[in-house]
Length: 461
Ligand code: FAD
Image (cartoon, rainbow, N blue to C red; front, top):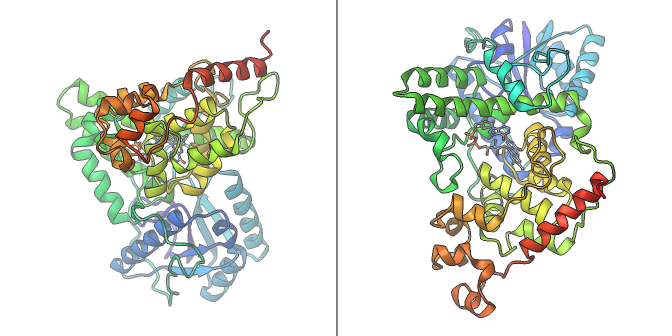
């Protein structure tokens, strides 16, 4: 019999290692090394997912072992207690996870317990797609072309037989020493993931292309934390979107499904960028001639984190993050651009805040997103393309619906005043929304400063 070690694959359906294991004993280990980097919103999502995974195992006549400790010790002990020959798991590609997995594998093999690992969390692993010269891709468009052409595996079968061991309880967020999560934080678990996926495929996917940039329309899948924790299998998502494509009524709908599938490719693109360049976690991917001389003003950073910059679309995004542990993609781009190009703050500060607050924080995607916005990433936004936060708000939230949802001070303010907030006089602002701040910086001035900062870094004369 085999032990199946669950990590970022908290499901029984479409799970590669689990489907290949013999009479699996499923185990999840609350690893103190991982909990050290966790946050309430993600721990809460994880515990929901464990409860739901346990229910899924019980429906198959089995159960899930939940332990706390060092995986090397726990897995060795469980293998001994249950007479397991092998521990199987699905591969994780981030630098810390790879390091941990190497250590666990070595400890098990030293105790005469075999290990087998499988590809599962992505459709194509980081060492599968290279340029014709054999190098990893650094430009998405070319990577995507090859990614798209490759055949995709079908979802895996559920296991026929699982063990029904004596199991430990699943702790609460409190028992693990974390504060309660944000009140509107997303819920974990395979049932929620399936509901989201099916709901999205029944209509959202067909308008995704034209509506995905409009945060008030809420038409994206909201699957990011589920893909991160593996409460949905990526092959299942792919297969179902392929069926949606076949059912599409016209080219527009077909292209819309393809646009969604391209986001899955972005996820795998950033996974392979991180895999081949682990230093990007802390270093710029793109090197400039000189160091970028970030300003890093503490008061401005504080205002950004709390959603009090006086730029309504930025503040709405930052408050969505505080309330829900989630931010819409277009708005992530806007707030990241604002931090790096208007406040001239090092992207690592923003990345650190997102890592603390996001339910879907994923090293590869988060890092990729931040370095893109900061013009330091692979095929990043060029340094001279700087979002105007007022225009972004006007274009993508014309009625101010998203802004008003998260910035209650602006609920009674007409949309055109919201989108010209920077042009109003202090008296007008005080009258319209007394508790809401004036812009903390002047976008036009800061834009010029950002250009100079990058030109200096580039070594331009
Ligand atoms: P959908 O639009 O429904 O997309 C489907 C899935 O594709 C997502 O769930 C996600 O897994 C993937 N995806 C979508 N957009 C991207 C993208 N640009 N890059 C990589 N994968 C993508 N995504 C994360 O999963 N974790 C992060 O920590 C993260 N941090 C980000 C930070 C910044 C500064 C930026 C600009 C983007 C970040 N993203 C991150 C990407 C993107 O914003 C989220 O994946 C998306 O908003 C999640 O919502 P959704 O599931 O409804 O997405």
